[in-house]
Image 1: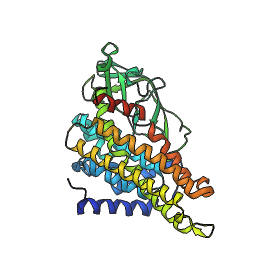
Image 2: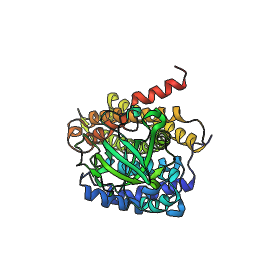
Image 3: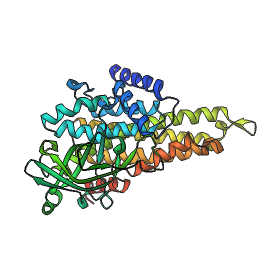
Image 4: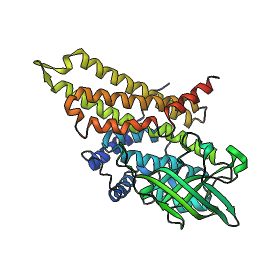
Length: 378
């Protein structure tokens, strides 16, 4: 068991951290879709939008673990966590299933643009009555002679506002239950697709999310991912990558946050002493460090198991819960350490707002615990 990173891994992460810091180190989320599109292209130049995509199309060809390490460096460098989330969702929930399940024709058509960030992808699964319960999907894809006709609405899709590609899931056989769901990589400019306005959100402002409406949208057959009825399996495959790797962003956020808290505790003086000398403060920071390191080990292990093609469902679920709960708890602690300054917009306050949705997206904490319970035979 080796807990060290290789020189190649360290150098790759250092490069990403330095380049991302130079571009985004002092910036905050704008929420402007045009700015986000420009940022995607810059992320593409750094290599972030194609970390796990094939080298033959310009991608990094990285494993899940190396992808997570790079996203961790990105999250540590970039205070716009919404942008980091947008890039990771594009890569893991969208580009990965195109990589693994698209026809050769569609892979050739899409992957190079996904690598560079010229093509921005949105994952559209959630509906008003189908969040954790994907068996309740109501968007339909009716087979026709040369493809499918999609009808219905997705209620929440990250990047939808600026998307060039929609990776979505629809019912092709209503009688087949779980096996009646199919996956599609749909160009967003097809007739019959309407992308909604940006949804107002608590946090992650740098990721413009919106609704996606399909109105008799004809999708050529080549844009089907995998085979008919494989949609649920394809979705779970993409979620394994997202749950295992995306949360590296929050390891980076917590690393940056911890350093800020240590600096604050060392500089802020009350009652004639540095607040670091008060055990209530120093122990709070020690617990923040404990949460971060425990979450990091679980995340690295989950990614390693995914790379080894070993059983990883429970490990990924445990990792996701550990990182998300640590991010929320550490952000609350950071606000306490910064006091009144922590309540001002930006900094710890923004970190908390960006951390809260970690317990919801990619499968809620309750769903992750259910996966663990099932593996235990409960």
